[in-house]
Length: 314
Image (cartoon, rainbow, N blue to C red):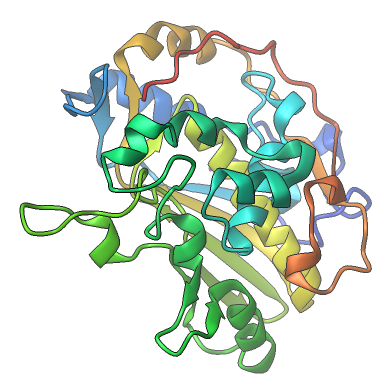
């Protein structure tokens, strides 16, 4: 598998493997090829296009010494800070569109605007602009029965510092009583969390971060999910002192939509290009909640041309 086999150093521009020595990684396009070759067509009555779904795709395992996992098969460099901003908003418990704008600043994840229209929010008994109490932010940063706030991210950092040997360095945004729905249960979330189930395992002075994704739009959503959670690994490394060695990305329901197939056929024919470098430009930050999108810089990024006309299915 691409990237395996080399000793890890810290993921910085100075200590990462030189760009010329990086091995092009094909794991993302391998999943696209697998979906197109073996995927099963399904339909969700809440969506406008059919899905082609594969339920047994391989994990993507990224050695962070081999470059940072931002796809190079098409250019997404113009908005790489937006997915990072989204994760930062989640870390602060963002629930509404106004929360995303306030926390994310000029890089706020504006794709959420299409999901919190008056019509869509009304389907779940929510006010316009409200993602709901079952969304990512309230799932990660939960209000307890006594009114106190429990931030899973900051509490996990404390555990990593105090008890690095335990195997319970986990966070999840999933709240079943707010995300499931049947005749007797009304869900309270516009988009049930699709990604963000994290497990961190420390070995020596390094750690591996695994992100399990219940559902992934591989052409559109997954590239953002790859880079945002790998960026979170860099943040976690800086504030804990442990070095992020591997980022593992698992997708339970990997799919593309019927109107995306022709674009992906073109994409997988492009020559693989090595991953770029992502760095945190302020080494003084030691509090996870102090990070902002502006603290990340992208270098060595030489992708294929953008594909700005890939359809997004709602």
